[in-house]
Amino acid sequence: MRLTGPALRVTVFIGENDTWHHKPLFTEIVHRAHRAGLAGASVFRGIEGFGASSLIHTTRLLSLSEDLPVAVVIVDTEDRIRAFLPQLDELVSEGLVILDECEVIRYTGRGEEGRER
Image 1 (cartoon, rainbow, N blue to C red):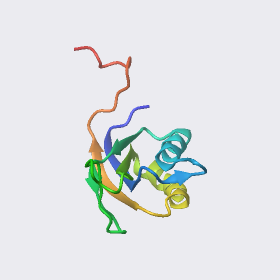
Image 2: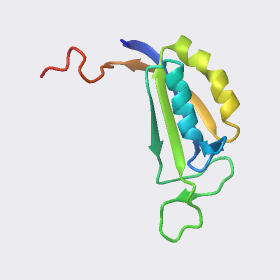
Image 3: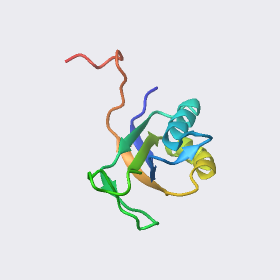
Image 4: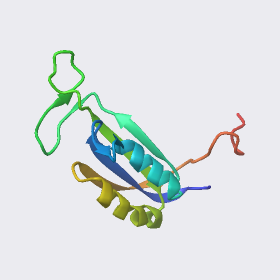
């Protein structure tokens, strides 16, 4: 798949302990994005943060909370991202979902042409 130029980035902020049918919610989001044929998805684990609940989640040793923030980032064309949004609406009952316009400069997988240096 080739992807360059204008695109949309959807970022989903959830907790790492959030689940969907007894498995991590971030895993379900990534697998659905893959099945939908989107260009790619990555999960990033935060070290500290808070959201609508106003509870601070942190990795600090003496913290009471270890439900750390997680960000799932997906980038693809606007049409493909917007077509995927209803799935996120179904999955994300607590958290934050944002859209950003972005520009893809390079999107190349391993072994694809243009990797020679």
